[in-house]
Length: 117
Image (cartoon, rainbow, N blue to C red; front, side, top):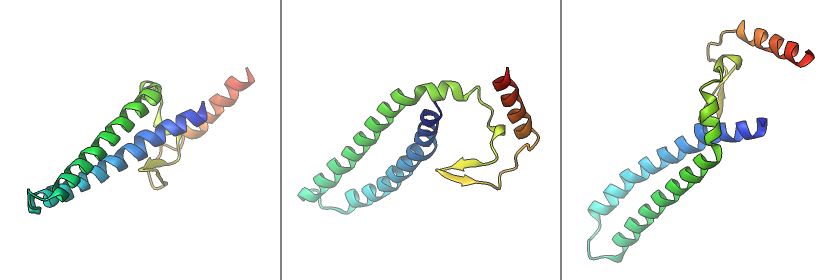
């Protein structure tokens, strides 16, 4: 379950934002390439179909990823992020985040109590 949770979290907090940022950057490149290319050249069609293909691949990846990890989205609303001593931003751990430190030992104490019972 832990490995699934980490894969789902990585999908939603790293891969999805990264691909969206990349596609937005490529959209700017596409607008410039499309507007400055000669409409009669085949390269304009290749650029257009290439960009549309990348958008389609991204959409398919998001769709199937969400089908696989939608359980994480449902359960994430009930999980308190205060039990972590870090925050993940685009896959990188940010340890500078102010954390409610008393929550972490209290949570671990409750875990030990429930495991012992």
